[in-house]
Image (cartoon, rainbow over all chains, first blue to last red; front, top):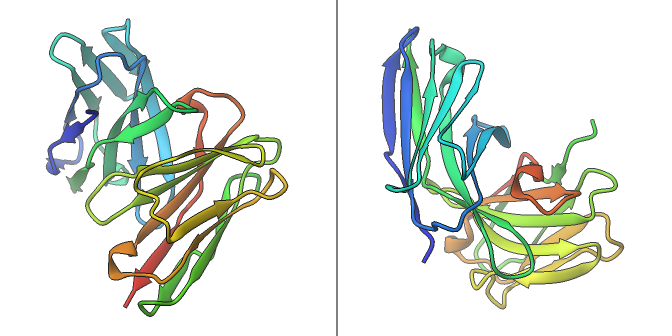
Amino acid sequence: GEDVEQSLFLSVREGDSSVINCTYTDSSSTYLYWYKQEPGAGLQLLTYIFSNMDMKQDQRLTVLLNKKDKHLSLRIADTQTGDSAIYFCAEEGYGGATNKLIFGTGTLLAVQP
Amino acid sequence: DTGVSQNPRHKITKRGQNVTFRCDPISEHNRLYWYRQTLGQGPEFLTYFQNEAQLEKSRLLSDRFSAERPKGSFSTLEIQRTEQGDSAMYLCASSLGARAYEQYFGPGTRLTVT
């Protein structure tokens, strides 16, 4: 079955880099995603990576994909207090009438000033 | 505001009552999705509409749940005879294309069943 796993909590100091890890099980996923969720706000798509890529960089965000190990990571450079949120990785699930998102359990990132 | 909107934002109800939530997608988005997010978990897919047709339902959607999209625009999700286990955030998303990265999420409706 499809299952996406993440560590529950990460605490970093402002200015440091944060690395949030994720493992997934569906090797047929074409796209893998990172979302951010702040209290009272909806899910915000941060970035995504196509499965034939190893790395994608977007400003302070770097996504690394290891397809062999089914491991995805999100690195946030120069982490700010505004980055404090829950981060979800997600894979694109196939089958049925539509592509759907299969989310991990989320990692709570706490940024200490 | 041209994003996905959901109403109400919060709903507190007693066990056994019926509740209905509404989602207004981005105009012209023909695809609409409902997800449920329980505390400490990621969102889980519930159901999918293309225009007014409900094309897929998750096995999470018990018989007490019904969703409609009568004119292919807004959608409603009704829960009958609510149970405490129904307490969750109900998220709606809409898209024009089929890829998951095209889904835009609303702010959600938080349901608390007492």
